[in-house]
Image 1 (cartoon, rainbow over the protein chains, first blue to last red):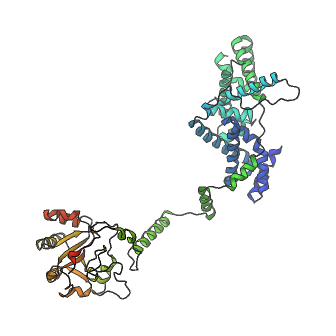
Image 2: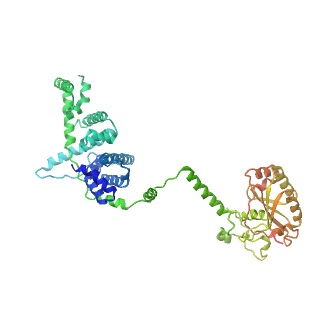
Image 3: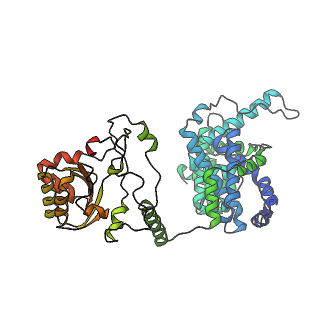
Length: 186
Length: 300
């Protein structure tokens, strides 16, 4: 597992190896970028948010107590950034300018797919993402961590500092809420 | 099992983490309840949709952008980084000590006998004839009177005299430019009680001397040179210091009709104001301020 090398990279980075920081970014950038995208829904904003998260990692790496807990620490830090950015953007009316009818990305035709099917697939994905984004912050968070980031209950429990049972019940409620939002599409 | 109970088990059912009894109870209920069965199918479809979402590839310039942001630190970031580098920490007593030292240094600097920069050079040159200006800082070196009080009325050799402003007696008669009105003498009264102060001012007003209040503890007294001896007599009732020493002689300022004395009293923010307010005739004096003007009446 590539994430198993994270503690070693953190140790090297703390000792002044800046290449180790680059490798950490490369290792986690996909997850962090998609987490950010799940919050702000806009690619440029997500990129800026993900960069800010890694800048904070760079500056505050000394605050990490256990190198083996880097993943959880990174997600905690990322969630704080995402929450703050989400609130800030919402106050500015950023999300009210985005409509379900506005495709965020153009069609990306894979080999063998017809434009109609590809459009339907993209449209479905966009609707699901919109539905996730419309959830309450706590519900959205647990869906993103479990169903999109594919973290274990134990990891989520550590990141959110909640008992595992609470995480499961929150996740169940969030999934039910998401199901109700997508009911007309199912 | 009730319908309301089934939905709470959907996630565990999907994760296959239900115990045997709960599993049997749930499956039996779903087989017999079309509504809950539909809910379960929709729940599964929702999960399938969510799990089918593809993650987006991060933009190629994500890492370079991070380096760019790290290189471009803001002012606050730099200051904070410096503080962190210094591992700066202060206890409350240490911070209080530094604050006290800073305040003391400021006080000493302000009261320094060394020459201070002229604060009204350009403004005074622009003054029109007769224009009145209220300076923010008194043109009298405040340390001057303290200096003589510690030196038996003699100005110490290590002290710089009032060279920032010329004495009124030294002004050239032909000099029509506005000049800083400067007292001819300085008087410091170290101890005076309320009643004595009221009495002192009343006697001065009875003699038709002019009193200008500069601050709560500093006054300018204008009186005829011919009454210099009376002025000495009034001061003689108190523990006072006089500068220059020549002002102790009744011949002092013979070339002038009016002499001006700066009178400093013990600092008390309320005492002088009360003393003057008590006397109705003195009330208008409270509104007077030290001024920068041509004062031909002060010349002989």
